[in-house]
Image (tube, rainbow over all chains, first blue to last red; front, side, top):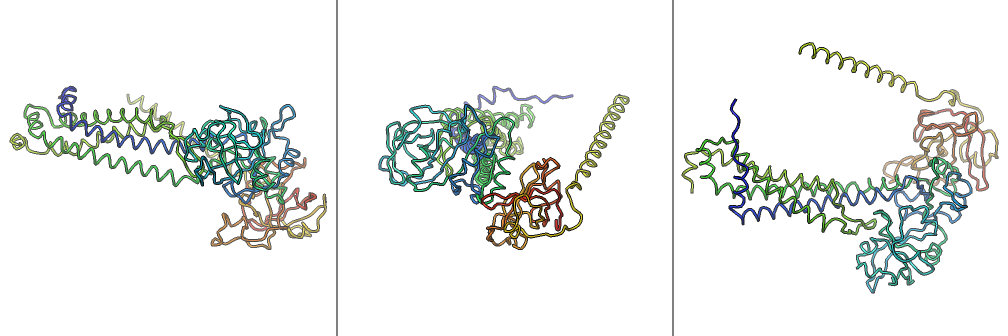
Length: 388
Length: 170
């Protein structure tokens, strides 16, 4: 019967502009909080995405049964690739070329431009790796020849050096040998991008070992993992296991679950800090408007309408802060390379990050405005009119 | 309005009854898809030997009956096909305080010469395309006797192409 008469929309907007310093400080504080949330959620999304795209469901990894979840611990006999090629019919073949890639994977100390002891990831491969690792693209230079390496897009970030130090023609040292960079490659955001690739025989020679870390094979259409799994079960002497690459990286995802949970906890804590920041600001803002609020009530505006107006102001500020933080995140944070234990990945400010960040910002605006507004509205009108 | 409500209520009731009957059918079907008796032996076969003895004495294409426990690896079963790894039952599995990823991987024991691969095969000689856990009603550390042909290779590996399995302990 009686519709709630709200305060005009422009009233809230003009109130924000009447106190520019206070509004600007609140805007800055909220923007910092929302930007921090973007960074942390971008970290989580980047980590998840890196592991998700690293696994090709059509690629099977055959590696040591004793390696548990880390192929760096794997050592398999040098004759395994030949045995797999001879015994499995489900491997992709084209023009007499078998899509089977023997690889040696190593985490080692690398020297770049006199910076010693940098922890890097090196993979010794043959030309078959380009057939099996379908997401790999050479973007500059050439496939490595003898004594050469090819650097992934994020290899510099992994090593913590300037990307120019891994430009073509530059040199690095590891395992007592100097290597010249012959090219650069991308791999669709996968974990390979943080690696240095060299020729398998070169790496075996410097390490003085003939064994391998794993064999990666691409299944032909319609083939499944069963044949490889049965082969591994039958050759007990070789101590092998066959796993889809996607399952391998899914297991790694679960391994990093505590890190992701911790990151989400940080998001909650940062948001909590933002709520208190907003509360503090709004308490101060409302405290100075006690007489104004009482006047509005005396004029006939209901408490609910005034409450809605105060929430409107808070949410306007929060929305502006979210937009500002979003623009900074998209243009500055998105794509930033982060060094991590398993390699490097880029922060991803994607739709999920934007939803969480902006949603949290708006929530802060609303939650931060309600308690001080309710407090102000509880005061008797007569006493509030006499307030200084 | 009351008629509309009754009509809608009848529809909801009909859908609910249909769903329940379908789910009951599914449950009944699920209950029926237990272990397949065609591959199970009710009684203990004769001339049973342990995995280690079978590896030492058996020859290629010889009919054998081998007793062991399902295990020896962290994942002894092959998903989607009736195949698993068998370890000699005289070895004891690892205790919880022995820091093995799983008790049935026997990482605390010397497994050399005590492992065999088992494939449950059909009449065509090919592995049955069903997970052994569902086919035989077994799990890790189940004690079984597998009866079938021995397949040996030059490295001494033993694979048993089992036509029948007797489950001693589930």
